Image (cartoon, rainbow, N blue to C red; front, side, top):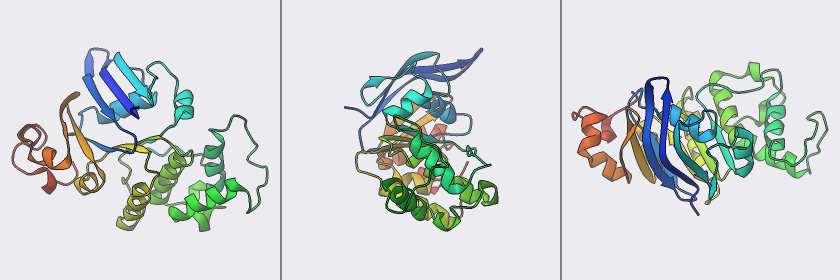
Length: 255
């Protein structure tokens, strides 16, 4: 069963066509990078896959189930999680309460975040392990507003990982992070459960070639290439359309 299947996906905003007949699929456990120049439609594609935007045409299936017209919260219960470039946190709550809310989001019942949990509770142990991995455990009682921008980005990633997703969507996960924070995040992502599929957008080619099993390339809303990193690096169409034919893919930085 495929973790994600996209067939003939298009998205229009009035007369502007942002995505055009995009089709691809992902296997469980696969790391798939989505790259392309600015304005290619990458973030729009992520928003359609997550359910934040409806497609104009086409179909999206997650873990064998058609979710094209399914709202965001139902996709989350199927095993989808996502993190966007912009912070999406509860700034009036503590770091730990944000994580607890994310954990409760997949429960069949809702608990009050004020309900105390002791250190032997499985939820407490899970929260501690996740926050430790992100370097945030020592700040668990701090309000979100006291964190640096990089720490808030790490928190946002932690929220997306709290539900043990089967399919994780990441839009520029390293944006705003220091080199050490980026390395810490990449180490955690590499050690996700082997069945977790990860689709990520990044302008950082070092991250793309470090993480990706496969790469897909968008240009003006059209999927122009897909393949293993070495195939994309050598693809003349990618070099011409994405990089102007002047550089190799590996040699480019952000853009």
